[in-house]
View 1 (cartoon, rainbow, N blue to C red):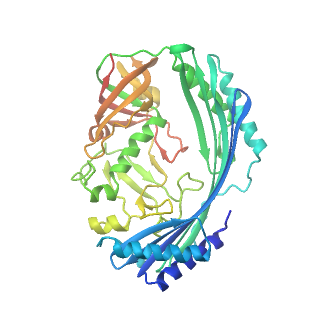
View 2: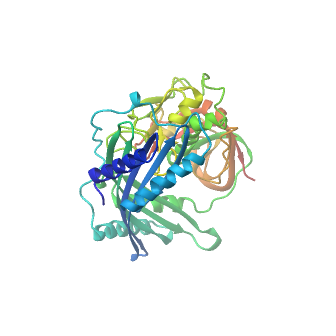
View 3: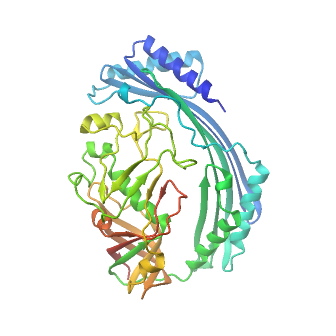
Length: 448
């Protein structure tokens, strides 16, 4: 895979060429990725995949008009053609008063911080196969498991380099590894399936592979015999792997792009207290070995830690340069890019701070409620805040988690859900968005 210096050199050459051919400003982002994954099923090797790819994206500005183009052909002739096409496209594009590079005085300067995101010890295919098999073996060993969807292990490397025509030029690398297992329990129409997985920057930060398999088996068997439940309003408690999605909807609604399009339910609520005053949601883009860590954003601004929600209120909109100009809001360092096209907006490592109550204490006063461990469907409207998802979980009866339930729907409005949200104390930093177990009172459950 290409190294950082070579990636930066490619970007700089492309920018220089674009300027020479008439671009008023430009930026280029090079990306390179390599990955290897192994999957097994029923103890036998099922698939081995190896992939490598490199690309470079160019964005040019001619006045207030812009265009973006991407290629994986790095020859001189290809770059010549790429630049000429991009400029031709830009000259035909509509003028956009908000388009442009990030302000030069806000660009990250100095050496990018080392966030320890590269694991130098790349596993061999045999090691990956051993991990995949061990995870599946542990899952199949759980009493009640009847079949397997397989076990998997993977390792990958990535590189991102960004160069702008007004002086920014930095790159960073990262690795990612993962282990998963998915199994089946029951027979015929009573079959259920579930999974467990973990990813990390360094393999040593992954849990024991046997735990992953055992947890996949436990979750699957626990789903057997699911029934329905009566339709009514009740407290709903979200398992952390589901609760992270609830906070993910908040992040989507806080996008400056959504605000500029007037397509978020948070419009007009910027000064309101959305959560209980004890709730804090933090972003830590510079967390060591973080799954979404990055030293700078896709426009060259330094990424900094901040409270996205403090004292129950949001800090403002997450912006890139275009959204900041359109909203008259500050630049926040949230620009993101896959390598081609104008930058989007995304957050980095986000977590909702833990509460003080254990999960048992959180549910102790619930006479009738629902503990949700899985959701389905896409019934979330960020414009209105309406939330409706298919759900699987367990009844909560007299403060205890009891029997499994399925084929039900949970519904509410995100604004109401946020106001009614209470966190437990079981926060773990294992995802890009981390939350403890969350309780939301007053949601509607539709079942029988």
